[in-house]
Image 1 (tube, protein in one colour):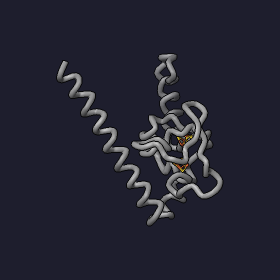
Image 2: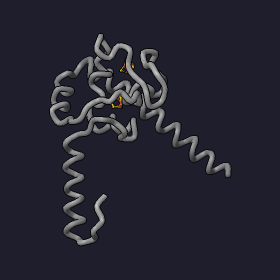
Image 3: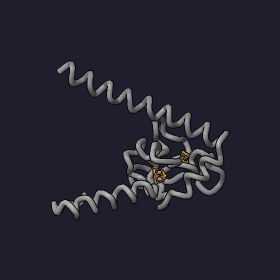
Image 4: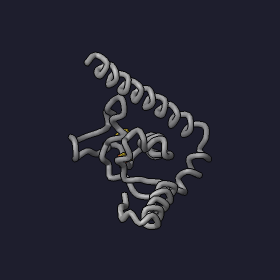
Length: 128
Ligand code: SF4
Ligand code: SF4
């Protein structure tokens, strides 16, 4: 029992540390490496539906209004920080929101279609 609790505590701690690290990473990239951001955004598709997941990482942003399922950023079109505009910069950021985001990257599409081709070729009939 104690080991199970310890496992969940460790897992939560690891996730939080990763989120802190990714927050810092976004800040550094947006401040010092705009070129990287622009390059990555060429392969980004979809749209933000303002679910607020990326606004509640570690701490809830004070500009996030509304409740679960009906959130909005109070400064979405009037000067939200660069890190917010750039989210998700790449695949790593999608991990932070468990891939529940309106954006995706072309690399994921490629992987998905390759998996489908594999399943079709193997004749399993199962496609993820
Ligand atoms: S997680 Fe994605 S869809 Fe949700 S608010 Fe952030 S960028 Fe928008
Ligand atoms: S400023 Fe807006 S987009 Fe940025 S974290 Fe806060 S609520 Fe989200």
